[in-house]
Image 1 (tube, rainbow, N blue to C red):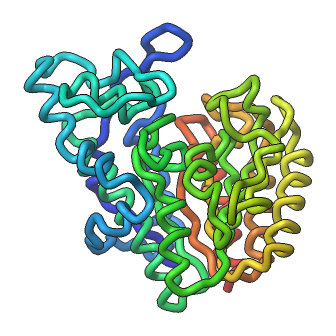
Image 2: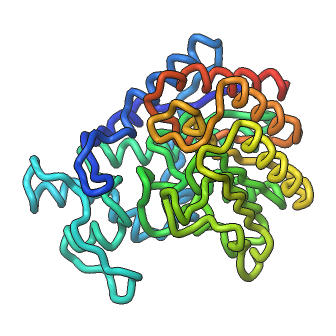
Amino acid sequence: MKAFFDERQLRHAPATYFRRGAAMSHPEQPERAEILRDMLIKEGFDLCAPRDHGLAPIKAVHNPDYVDFLSGAHARFVASAGPEALAIPTMHPGRRRGREPKDIHGQLGWWMTDTSTPMTEGTWDAIYWSAQTAIETAEEVLSGARAAYALCRPPGHHAMRDCSNGFCFFNNASIVAHHFTRQFNKVALVDIDVHTGNGSLDILYERGDIFFCSLHPDPSTYPTFYLGHADETGEGEGKGKSLNIPLAQGASQDDVLNALDTALVAVGDFGADALVVSLGFDMAADDPLAAVQVYADGFAEMARRLAGLNLPTALVQEGGYLGPSLEDNAKAFLTTFREASR
């Protein structure tokens, strides 16, 4: 099973963000990708750099104006506010009546939902190559590989069609799922990051060809809030094609595995031809953003059950932060999936 990663993904290096009214160290650091990269090398994965597939696959999922804004936003912000200022929005248009302004500060609020996605000098390179890593992984599977892994960083599953959210700028998993529809009639995207795949839900909610399922704590009391409730099942052609499985905060490993079984039954009922997994190691009990209790053996079992679907599969990295067990959990999942999918 090949893995894909580009060193330019390390260039996004946000120092701080605001959480619960306080500035604190940003948990989405380059080091988390370095840990995963080094584990892949130690475990003998064929680690490859992605080719450049351009912006078209990204703009097929995201609002092209949003994509174009991100490409030059940091330079414009520095020109306006100076190099020491933090490139985050300080105003928002509420529920989006109105129109995009021309001023960079107003545009940040137009295209960004929160303060967790500060732009740095290297952000564009990082998010561009994170998306290219995802697209290359999709191409590997479309070319006949049973499975491939995208070490995407920054992550993507909170990014909506036209706005960043929750550390995420481009929705890598949704880009892969859409890319898969070139060849596969029905694609399933299963999100096992601890947070709601709210961006994927937003992007895929009216699609009938991509089934989306997310396991996560109740969004009425746990970030990212707002989306991911059990009664949100899709609209239009997508009616019945979205499945949210809320968990109790502190849910046990068995609870999570039971929820995964429910998701896998739904994938089978949908008749998926291919699978995308939004893979979050922040399900770990000791993750800095922990909300449920999954351990290394639980990640291995999740991998075994997902591989048991016997579908062409792209694994797309989402969360998993600098907790003590990050490397062990990644090793348990990815080596188990590699063995089970041979």
